[in-house]
Length: 527
Image (cartoon, rainbow, N blue to C red):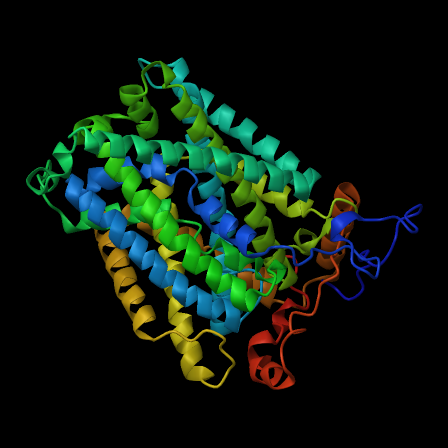
C-alpha cells in the first residue's frame, strides 16, 4: 500500500463507537482481531469436515471408471489415503517450523520466494478454491434435485442455479457471523457423518447376507476395459479430489490453540479416520451395485439408497445434500484465511486483509471468493473441474514438500518441534512425479490449460507486486478503491498477535530469514 494512503485501522473508531464491544473477536486493547479459538477437537473438525465434502459421493464413479476394476479402484482409495497421510506428515513439520496462516502458500513464498508463492496464490484464487466450491455446490444441487427427476438427469440450468443460491446463502451467513458459520458447519457435519455411517452399516449388513460377489478376488480384479497406466493415474487424481482439504488446517495456523501440539495431533487423528471411512464406504457401494450400475449413476449414494432403503430412500439424498452444503461452508471459511494471508503479504488487494468492525468476519475476502466461484459455475463440467483441481493441487503439493527438503538443506539448525525422516517427502515426491507425468501424457490439453492459467500469474506478479514505482495516479486510484471498499463493507485491518510470542529469542533469530517480510510488498498490495 502506498505510504500516503489513509486507511482506517482496527484501533480507530467510527463516531458513536466509543466503549462499544466488538464481540468475541475484540482484543483487550479495543481493536478488532481474530482470536486463537481453535482447539484439538475443532481442528479435527476442520480437517474431516473439509475433506468429506462431495468427493466420496462423486469420485467413486471417476475412480472406478479409470481404474478398470473394482479391486484396482479399492487399491487406489487405500494408496491415495496412505500418500495423503505421508503428505500430511510433511505439512505437519512445515506447519510447526513456519507457524503462519496461509498453508502451502506461505511455505512456498518463504522458501522459494515471492514469485513462487504468488503463483500458488494465483492458481488458488483463479482455479482451486472456485473450482472446489463449484464442484461441491453442483453436487449439492444434483442430490437435491435427483428425487425430483427419478427417470432422467436434472436440467443443467437448474443444477447451476441451485448451486448459485447455495453459494450466495452461505456467503451471507459467513459474512454475518463467525458463530453462525460455525453452527452451520456443526449441523451439516452431523449430516455427512449420518450419511457415511448409514452407508457403511448397510454395507456390513450386505456382506453378512453374502452379498460380496464383487469383493471376491477373482471378480474384483476382472477388468471391464483394457488396463492403461495413464487412466490409472487419472484414477489417482480423482481419488485425490476426494481427499482434498487435508491441508486446510495449515491455513488457520495462527488461530490454533498451541499449534505446535494441536496441528500435528489433528493431522494424525483425522487422516487415518477419513481413509477408513472412505475405503469402507466404497466397499459398501459394491455390495449393492455392480460396476456397470455404479458407472451409470450420476448420484452414487442415491442409487445405493434406492436399492437398499426402499420407501426410506429419501434419507440418502437429503443426508448427502447436507454433507455437501456443509462442505461449501467449510471451504468458504478457510478460503477467507488464505486470501487474508495473501493480502497481508502484499500479494492481493489490501482490502482482502480486513474484517468487519463488529462481526469480525472477512467480508471482502468472502465476497471475492463467492464471485469467482459463481463465474466458475458457468464453465466446463464437473469432472473436468475435478481434473483441473487434482492436477494443479498436486503440482503445488509437490513443490511445497520439495521445499521441506530445501529448508532442511538451507537452514539445518532451525527449530523443528516435529522432524520427520526425509524418506517421507521422497516417497511423496515419487508418487507426485508419477501423477504429473502420466496425467500430462493422458490429458495433455486439460493439464496444459491448468499450467497456462497458472503462468498467467507471472506478468501479474511483475506488474502488480514487483513493480514498486507505479504512477501516482494509479496508486491514488487503488487507494480510493480501497477506502471505498472499507466504507462499503465497514472493514478494518485486524489487530494481529505477535506470531512469535511463544518462541524463544534464540529460535526467533534462527527463524529470522523465514519471517523476514517480503520487501516487494511495500507497494505491491494492488496485484
